[in-house]
Image 1 (spheres, rainbow, N blue to C red):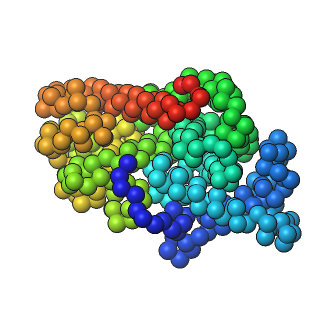
Image 2 (image 1 turned 180 degrees about the vertical axis):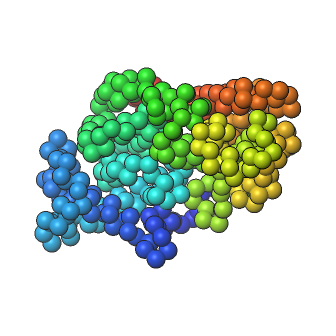
Length: 350
């Protein structure tokens, strides 16, 4: 991870627009306030009802409930913003593919200062839960139901230390869907750019940024999600304008608008500075890729085995597919290893 700032303000994560900085914060506050105010004790997670996570339910609260629970709700939301921005590569709350995922995180972090468990372990388990949920598509179907299930799952795992439950009822249950959920995160969908859901496109970008990779040109700069001075764009590693199968009349803009073009796959994107993106522009991959350091290549999951083939793309369609398949494989393996590392200081096996 890159060097963290000395201070942090919730506005850096919860800002929606410059004219309405805290709209998203207020929305999350009302939902969480309603939830914790409608149960007597946080260990009563089995009594939580779906209507409790509706912000309209907050209108039924009295002043005693509001005053009692507001401080801990506000602190939990701040901690959740820190976690999602520093650990999960989200620049703002708007990047969160499934907004309800912040509720289980906040529910657990509300208890972290009163538990006999190391905060690092708590955050590690939460991060494993976050990435595994995203790329297994657990929030794909019934988000409200999944949110309630995850509150119970994480409470039992972290607070009650029922680690077997996390392994059996979560990791093992959904392991076959991890980067393999049909029409969502499976290889065919991602490589062929076959209607990839925006939630997966955004989450792939966030995971790449969470690794704090070096920039392509300014390699002394490590990118991150919390530095507001960084103007980050997502560069097509194989630029669209270099497609050997396109005709001269096919402009870069036209190819960008062709959502089904294989080079528009999210697996072909990498976070770099806007200034670097402008300099590279539509240069063919063979004109810029070999200037990258080995570390930059590794941090951006670029398949090194194919670098020697970039100047021999006689069948560019086949090369593109192979390139994206190898990069997807590197991303998946890297993330799996990261999840194993995060759980290495816990009693959870993965």
